[in-house]
Amino acid sequence: MKTLRTGKWQKHKQMMANIHLVEYLPETMLFSEQSFHSLLQKYRKVVLKPDGGALGAGIVVVTSISPDQYVVQMRHRKWHYENAGQCYAGVKRITKGRDYVIQQYLYFAKVNNRLFDIRIMTQLDEHSRWIVTGMLTKVAYKGYAVTNPEEFVRPVGSVLQKSSLGQSSVDHLMNELERISLEASRQLELSYPGLKIIGFDVGIDTEGHIWIIEPNFAPAIYWFKQLPELKTYKNIIYYKQIVRNKKASTMNSAPAIMADTYDEFYYYS
Image (tube, rainbow, N blue to C red; front, side, top):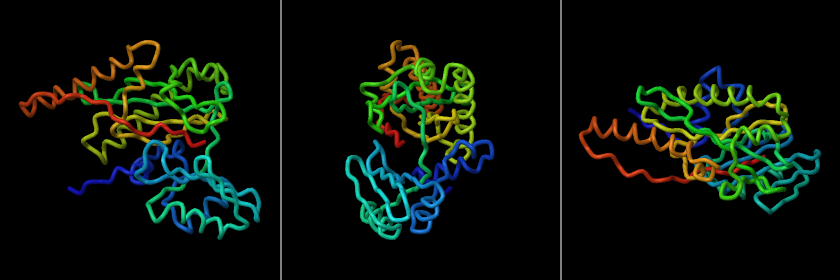
């Protein structure tokens, strides 16, 4: 059986095959000259990400301010161009022929004027059913577009209550976050049958709409140690061990030692 790639583009395509997930996925294409001009003309602002990138490396944001003013930004560097053709050529030099995806730029909600995103952990239980075992928010430094989990990990409910979204929508959002992540987990399992755990990076825009930024198939769990209580972290460990013991029993071998992994923690808006 052919093994599917686990890059951003392939995972996006698998989720797009589910009609119940389409509205939660930002418009995404493989980066090319045609897709660049098409999405930039449509949205005026786009974000490019390495297809196989992690930790926020290589992210490029392109803004069309006017027909003769374009801005390209990568981290703290900016380039200015006078037309779309020059802008595309500039982006091509940055990407250096590597595979990139290009997406509509999303304007996400803030808490205390800081951007935040949400990590949702889903895992298979002892009956091979997907369940949500943990959530947290990663809040960016003020004025920064990148979340720093080492410093600003917070419980989801408290952040949503204090955010620009308003307290009245918190219960609904929490239910929707769980529903959408479970639907996406079941969909991804169809294409990646070996999945046991997924870490979804999710954003909520200024209108309260939920967007799936990316699913991570080897998600870090150490962030959950930074929450005020260790209950969620222990819950994740518990279900990881159930799956490992079940596999070990089937294979008549000892369970492997668990190790934290490291994945995406950027927030591109």
